[in-house]
Length: 426
Image 1 (spheres, rainbow, N blue to C red):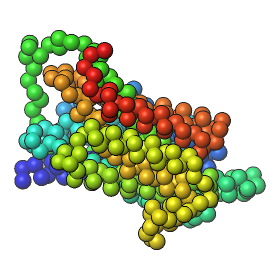
Image 2 (cartoon, rainbow, N blue to C red; image 1 turned 120 degrees about the vertical axis):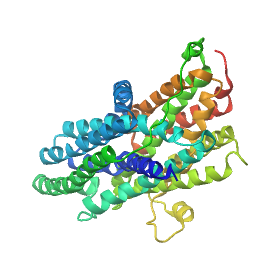
Image 3 (cartoon, rainbow, N blue to C red; image 1 turned 60 degrees about the vertical axis):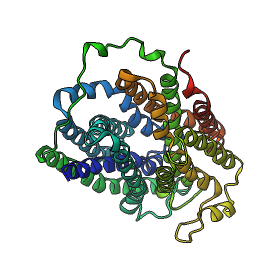
Image 4 (tube, one colour; image 1 turned 120 degrees about the horizontal axis):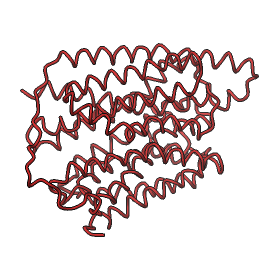
């Protein structure tokens, strides 16, 4: 019972991580319409968000060392609130640069929150039950990803049910200006409300009493005897994570743009399909691993599924709904063209990649595990860079052809699962 309140508090943080992160899936196609952006330009939203994890990781860890875990969480929430508040002048002025700045500030806040809350939840209770605590946090994170695009659609796009990139392009200049002004104004109340909520949570976290956690003591014998970059399983694991975060973000953050291009009225909620499939994969993984399926087997299967779904996406028709009807089945879920269905199913393929790579990459690092974790975190840069590569390819060859980039990502992940993680020397 002593850990119940801290678990609830940190669980709330993980829910916030997922909500703010996967709100981008609805935000990107929305900004593409109101700012008249190409795919490459729109994906700068994801770039500025994820690059903050790389640029601000060391500064935020320095702040955390001096502030402590709880105060670090307070600072992180306040930063997220500040970033969300910047969406107000961005929407009022339509300056895309302010949207990008807002995303970077939000990403910086999430960086310190992640840095503080992940080790906190690990050390909050017995080491033997740490995996269960992490699993619960992961489910909360992905469940928030299901809700965020639906929230955005309900509050921002409810009055514009038939507005897509294609329909906007058919308007006259004057009509488009009026439509864009109306759409931009709708984004202000929810982002202002979320900003106020973050500041209120920052105050609440400052006032709540969380148990202090003890860091592991270091001694002279802890001095590393081997350079951290000399561990192939670690370095290659970071490369695999780079491609994983990239393919995950491409699936979650471009599905809305693709849906808008195809004229789907529910384009802003399509990211919810990806995240729902991811939650299903996460739950299945919790049941199967490690009793019936090893971490290596889960990673190999995830890469294989990713390759299969991507291949089917590339050869499918934009107009066909036959396969989608079979896959989704439920009449309550609007049917979507097959490419959209296969993009959503990539969430299922992606679910267990992150938790499977980490233990394989950190194996046999001993006292270098903390440094190894820092190297792996750098893999988040894939979420900043690979979507831009997708955007550039999309501009040259079309959005569907650009998804061939996913084949490279899943091939790298598959190679690491089969061979890369076993290497112990270069």
